[in-house]
Length: 78
Image (cartoon, rainbow, N blue to C red; front, side, top):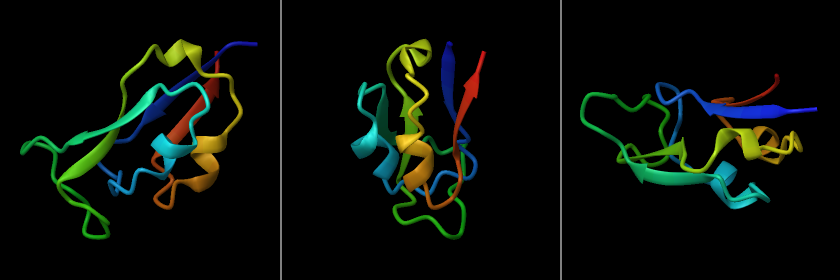
């Protein structure tokens, strides 16, 4: 099976748990661009998670999804 990971940047709270738990290290925290406002619940409104590696390298383990407090991380089978 093949999986792909995506991050909803509009709801990402910038906590970074998804980044720290990804076993294939394809997620990163980056500075939030000014044109993407942080949600009111953001832990760090200056940051957001992003897919920095090949999203198709996702193994479908759901480690990132399980720790995301805002449910912004999604893994889909393709």
